[in-house]
Length: 504
Image 1 (spheres, rainbow, N blue to C red):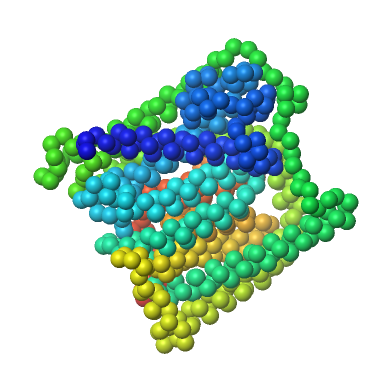
Image 2 (cartoon, rainbow, N blue to C red; image 1 turned 120 degrees about the vertical axis):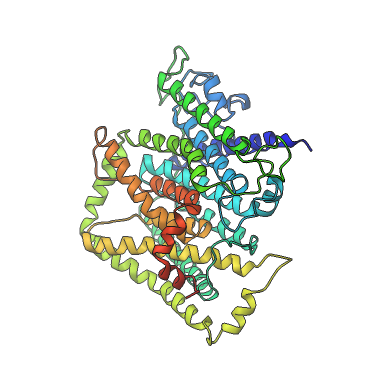
């Protein structure tokens, strides 16, 4: 096989990321408007409702080829579409670099192996991460525009995290962060309790909504649907198809970002390794991990592009800004009662966590049975309960952090302090990336949100701040930096880390 197979590899990653970004755009547009994802089946222009041809629906390329306008009615396509596609393909590319090229994360295949072998071994954990961040990107875009988080995304991401962790459990040195057996068992039981509690509450709300519709004379079996914009309801924009200067600048920024990232990935090592063939690109064979500082430097342009896109999206004044502030103000008098109610709802999950911990700890009633399950192997290297315990520990600890912030600060401030949708984001991210990354990412997201708020103050004033986008960026940065300052941060809280990991 040619040494330059990496060209096809990178093209596949970028192309797949762009296609997922295009689908994310469909979700972002249709879900808030109650338009089914499969009806109509093909993408359409919101202005003239013309079905978009496949050659006009190529991610990124078609936007610039059509100069940002619909081919049929010349309606200006919002730049958001191409920005989402760019961010998605950048995320896919950077995560591919993180796992299989720079190899900066512990627990993955060693850097001495080829990229193809690394991918064949570790594709489940890569798939879990790209699915998580694709879901979080869709949620973030909707949150920025509507202050609404659809937790079905977090349910899907968390489910993928549990399933893919269960089939990916290699034991390597240094290892992927794993919980101790006691913490894992307690977290699995608590997860079961949280799922059952959520299903009961969802059933109760469904019954209440059904009863309310019946009392109002509506047919509860008929779902409410908002029709997509039509040519009569939305003015048709016709005229010269030309890209605005801002779009040209965005295109140049994208081109520079992608070129810098791809060149950084494939450039030859500065210090050749004796085991490498002459002229072999780094993507094909690297026997030493890339230093964390060098890795952070080369992904910095992509991260900067995402940050600037978030700032640009935040300065837009929307009707939902005033609506969310009015809603928060109207619920202020009931905030403390709501927090205490939520704490009461969480008590069964907390009880299951404590009971599971006591039952499987050394000398506990279920300790022999759990130890047998904990070490059971399916195949040569797969330990399903180790993987499930890893996802469950991240899910429960990250979710507990979010609930603690919400309940404590709501009781102290007398108003809603943290959205429940944001807590679902933290729990889903914990199931995939681990609670340690969520902990670091939570503090990073708070700093990023404050910085973003300061930068947007001259353009848009308001108290409401959608945290979904900043949590997503914070978790992404924490994952990338896990091999640099992350270990030093964990050392500062070493006792707590050892305690919850079951190693103390």
